[in-house]
Length: 384
Image (tube, rainbow, N blue to C red; front, side, top):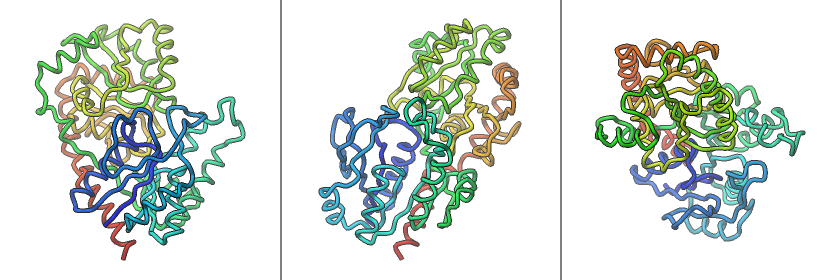
C-alpha cells in the first residue's frame, strides 16, 4: 500500500508523537509498504529526508516550540495524486490533520486518525493570558468533530477510548498501544565504562543513587511533584540525584523551585538529548518516575521497563494494564507517598531488581512489530 501520514510534528522534534510516527513508519516499510510523511517545515531540519514532504509553516503563537502549517497546498495535492495513496493517516487535529481530511474527501481516500493528545488537559497553553475563552468544553467539541469525520480512530489506551466515547465519538475506535523498538534500551547493549563516563559529565558519582525522568519539561508532566518530594528523600539519602532529561517551557520555573527548596545541587537538568542517545541515558537511572496524569500512553514507562529500571507512576487510568503495583512497578496515589517509595527502591536492590525483571517480561506485547501488524490490519480493512 501507499500510505500518507499527515502530522504537525516530526523529526528532528523529539516527543511521544514523533516516536510513535517514526516507529510506525519503520514497521510499515519493513512490511513492504511505502510510507510518505507530510509535515511542517522546520528550521532545525538540516537535510531533506526521503519520502518526507514539508509544507510552509510558522511557530504556533500560543506554543512557539510547535509549528502549524498551511491548511491547503495545491503543490501537495499534486504530489498526493502522483503518489496514488491508498490510505491517509492523520496524527493531529490541526493544520496537517485538516489538510489530510480535505484530501481524503477530495480524492476519495479512506482516512484513519490517531488521537494522541487529551487537549482539555492542555488548554492552559492557549488560555494563559491570550485566549481565555478557549475551554476544555471547546477542546472536547474539536476532538469529537474531527474524529467523527474519519473512517476509523486509533486510541493508544483504553483511557483515551473511554474519553472519546464520552465526547460523543461514534466512529469505530481501536485501542492500539504505540509499539517500541526495545533494542536501544537494553542494558546489555552498553558498556559500563561509558555509562560511568556519562554520569561524570553531569556531576553524578558512580555511587550516587539516581531518580530519572525522561520527557518534555512541561506543566502537564508534573515534574514539580517529584522535586517537592526530593527534600524528604535527601534527608535519608543525601547523595541521591534527580536527573531530568528533556527540555520545555517550565524548565526555568523548576530551576527556581529547586533553589527555593535548596536542592539545586541534587536536581540535574540534562536538557534535550539526541534521540539516538536516549537509550544510554536510561542506563544512568536506578529508578524511573513520572507523576503525570495527562498521558495518553506514557511511552517512557515502557522504555524504562525495557531498560530494566523499576518504574514509579502516579495512579491514573493511562497506566492500567501497564504498571501493576508491587508486581512490575510501584504506584502512588498521594504525592507524600513518593519519597518513601523512592527510598525503598533505591535501598532495597532485591525488590527493585524483581520489579524490573517482571516489567521487562510483561512489556513485550508493546513491541513495535505488534504495533505495525495491528495498524496494517486497520488499513487493509478500510481499503477493502
